[in-house]
Image (tube, rainbow, N blue to C red):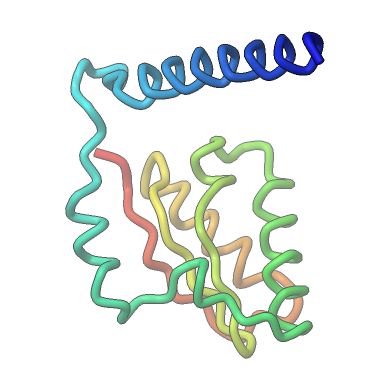
Length: 131
């Protein structure tokens, strides 16, 4: 019985430490010294007119198309990690690209990769360039 209590107390203590560390991490400012501000992006996305990851269809063809596009983007090692992580939604052959890339060249390159992927009929490039 003592071992169970000790284990429970130890787990509680560890969870408390992790929770405090997590809060400290979340509150840390960005490398510029200011907390990240994506309020404009959040406002743009709030009204629901633009596709988001939650609007990705579970249709097998759409999921497979999204996976092919993602694989093609990640396979281009000339792109930054930021570009590799753009949001994409595939629906009926149309791929919507969202998120931030480093520059206009990356924006164009991601669109070219997506449009060149088998099964893509059109690309809606809503990527933003980092400021």
